[in-house]
Image (cartoon, rainbow, N blue to C red; front, side, top):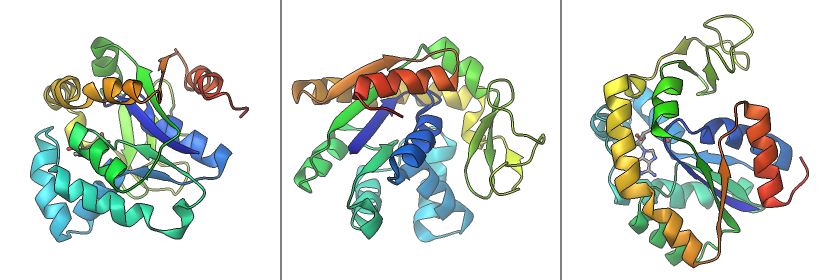
Length: 212
Ligand code: AMP
């Protein structure tokens, strides 16, 4: 299964990708997580990406395409993968095609901007392993502590309300056209965001025609 998850920032792509990845035993490739790890490690790419990320802007296509090309060449991707947060622009999607990567499905999680802004204010992210939580809908077992690795939970700088609005604008302008791109190739499926994580996962499974 080669799957792309499309959707606005905060639509739940990361959460759903984690679940699908576990159940389908294929890796998730999250460009956002790769970039945050690079920032934390102070690499050249991380330092360059930081100014775009902190402003809610997209990191340049050539940088992202290079990162994804390298990651997809790793052996764990040979039986499939889930792309979370890539492609985010038409040139990125074209680059994927040029690499000869034929995806099975681009699955779009549909959600309103108002719900996103509300939701992002409660999001918490593990400083160490990037797992995400929500204070109301997906709380950790112990407040402020990651269930998976014990790391400290933090509010991502780019989850601040004014940055979220900038990111939504970028999403509508740059990323939403990908729905037409994949629809024209007969690859697009869409599900509406549901009130709970589990019910959204169930909708996704139905759309993909798989049993989870
Ligand atoms: P995410 O965790 O997917 O919301 O990504 C966080 C930030 O990383 C985005 O707001 C962008 O600044 C950057 N980023 C992640 N993926 C991409 C991508 N495919 N293209 C450009 N920028 C990206």
